Amino acid sequence: MGKRLEQAKALLSSENIAVVAHELGFNDQSHFTRAFKNHFGLTPGQFLKQTN
Image (cartoon, rainbow, N blue to C red):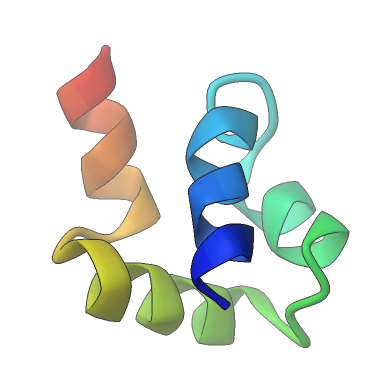
């Protein structure tokens, strides 16, 4: 799962969260968000705010 979440960081710069979750095989956006936060300590939205 770590590889998929690392890919997510790159994809989030050009796709919205729901699309990234789907492209990486997560069943729904909430599962993706929880996994992302557990791995990185930030939600995808927080990550995007930090990088902009």
